[in-house]
Image (cartoon, rainbow, N blue to C red; front, top):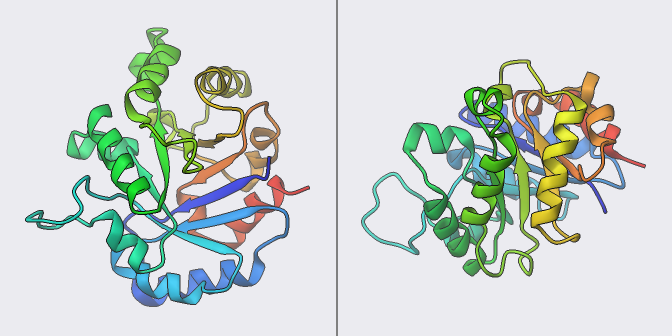
Length: 239
């Protein structure tokens, strides 16, 4: 399966920063790997325009479940598609924690994304307390079952496993832990569904993580803000 390396820029950067980072990623994109960058909403149009005709896809970091309406501060899936996005990240742990998003809510957003022609990247992952209680596999399985909508496979939907306690902390699960969760995910999804790992992925650990069974790419946070690091991770996924 062709690897996917996705960069989640989160709430970082000025417009100038976004344009420069996008150009550096475009210029260094390796062959044999699918690249995706997800800038903040306010930079999406400029980044997408810069990537027209280039081998780097662009996505949003969230979308609303409704097609339009009185939802101040939200963005509809069709709006993302209209400015050039092809993907959207949904159910990230920061959204689940900061905005109280539920599996049912994520599922509704994914349905809207698919209806607008976007590929959903649905995030799942356990907290440290859940892992220490031996509940990691059950928590992740429940999130998958509750968050993936009908039409997910046909839309080339992607599942990203991001243990909450490893995001932005510099900590990563053991390779055995990652492989175990990805085996659970594979058992719950189609063999054609790409499964990403996210959580403190860096150039130093990318090769080992991307070489694990059922790991088809990475969802990269902090390291995606440095073009050289993001491209090094992408290079580690290549043939």
